[in-house]
Length: 430
Image (cartoon, rainbow, N blue to C red; front, side, top):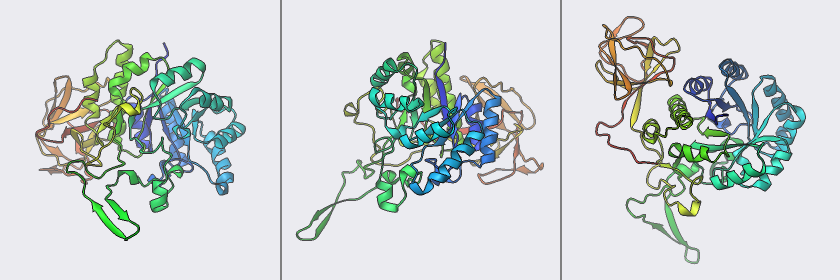
């Protein structure tokens, strides 16, 4: 049986490695030019992207290169050179957003599989067929599509791969077709420069043009002023329904600009959900335990399962971002021998170990610290905070660049975390 693909964001070389190590089958990223994350700082240099492709391929994984920006006429010659240069690195597919770029890629690199970006807003069989006829081998459907419509597209075009977003930021506009940032700050969202204006709080006014009178409207307490702020997508509780449909070839996670911890936890949670599905298991509580540990804008299952008019909980009206249930306190180095502190850490703090699936963590009790299991999870306590240079610290804080010695070797890029709230209770179901 061909398993569904798990596709994770790779905003940097480090995040690429983490996503793959934590369970992604494929990752997507780009070398900023013509990518929709150009404003976030350069994702990769050409050499780093080549290294990432080699890392993925050596592990039997795939890399999809993003060329999903909307180019201007003045950039077309540069675009042609960039297409050829990126193809030389040997990615497994290009992600493109416009008919013209799709056609150009097909002409310049006819051997390259072409995935049509969600920016193209494909919602139906007619549009999917047009792009398939133009050479698209996969459609990344609009976030607004329903599972029922995906089934219809698959029925009509069984050889066309379909990819859907299952987790990450949602756009207030129609799958990214937004001009708010352009109007307010001159930053063009479809050229990778979105300023996320929809996440800001706004004050509401009523104006009388005849008298020039302007009244500020007072919002009802508790309703708030984040009038365009969409909640984050979370479909981990619906993986069984999605895969039962037989229409989906790839589950995609949004978030190239998000943290390394986000790349790890989302890959791990959806890897568990996918693997469990094929084993006949559906442990929603387990997947949500991981995903609720992330910072988020509140979660919604959005529109894939339910129609938009049936949903009344897709906006976060009173805040732009909230803490997750956990706080990252440390990240293990590539050698697995030390960690860098990311939060205040004291001797005897209980640190939960977040390692890739199927990692074997040695249970030890030595002069440095202990590791132990509880409720199916593995924890660590450090008796001493001993730096790589042998200095002993009473406490370490975020920003301390001294690697701290571990009591046992851990997998590279393992995360250590603690509860974010001492009185943390249950989290909302999604």
